[in-house]
Amino acid sequence: MTKILSGKEVAASLKEKLVAEVEKLKESGKAPSLCIVMAGDRPDSASYIKGAVKRCTDIGIDCHVEKLPEEISQDEFLEVLDRLNNDSKIHGIIIMRPLPEQISEDVVKYKIAPEKDVDCFNPINVSKVMSGDSDGFPPCTPQAVIEILDHYGIEIKGKRAVVIGRSMVVGRPLAMMLLKRHATVTVCHTRTKDLAGEAKRAEILIAAAGKARMVTRDMLSEGAVVIDVGINFDENGKLCGDVDFDDVSEIAGQITPVPGGVGSVTSTVLAKHVVEAFKQQEGL
Ligand code: NAD
Image (cartoon, rainbow, N blue to C red; front, side, top):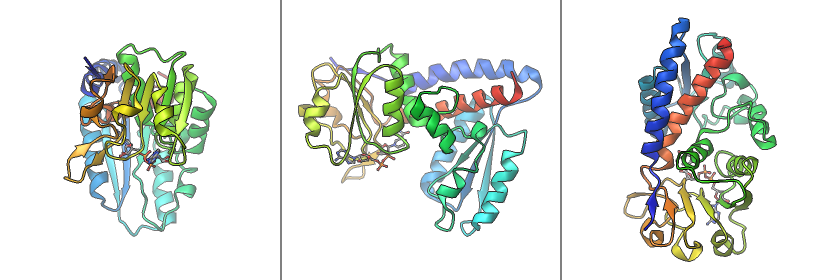
């Protein structure tokens, strides 16, 4: 019988610890705070922001959304960022992407203060993840995967882990984080010759390709732990992951559902990073 790895359960457990921690930290007279910067008005960004603000506020983190016009120039955008970087009352900053086309991500990413960069946008934080330095902030989604494995006591050390996807937001940093935890890691991507063969060797399989239900039972070994990062809509408009949940459910040992899996943990990891940034900046 396949065990469901509930992201909601992991998020609730993390939240409980954070609520208690923030309550105590507030005795210092200061409160952790997050600023989300959004240029323009994308509906997917708006729904992400709504979820993140709700989760952070519930935990006791002050949230502020800096809404900027779609047509803001790069210089004006950088001025706003500079102000936020220098505002000692703001401890974490998230910049919603994609940015409007006149603003270059490659310029902006160097300008966000690394100590406030709670979702790993600045190359300094990226390089810390790549070099195994736990001092920075890893991106929230890969960290959510690690939180799920840890919550359910799934040993990472020595395991054969296969990651499908090599993007800078999920697959690649996650591969490095698993390597840091002593897994033997294979990263698969669109040019991988024998995806099913590679995936079948996994004791822990992580799907982060963004292709609806692409992982099927023939790609899994009996008892494998399956973490589904994908958020897709199928041809009927139904939300689904990268894994064909029904098809693999007899084979997988443990599996995260979609919805209710990795996505449920991400905003709580964001809150955890803001609390960490607050402690670092306030010397608590
Ligand atoms: P991306 O498009 O940037 O990267 C996808 C990666 O998968 C690429 O490296 C590509 O080489 C690989 N890939 C694509 N099709 C493949 C195939 N058929 N075989 C093998 N490899 C293939 O996507 P992303 O931003 O990394 O996101 C991946 C998925 O995770 C998406 O569904 C996205 O919506 C989801 N996501 C979820 C969360 C969350 O909180 N749960 C957060 C971010 C992204």
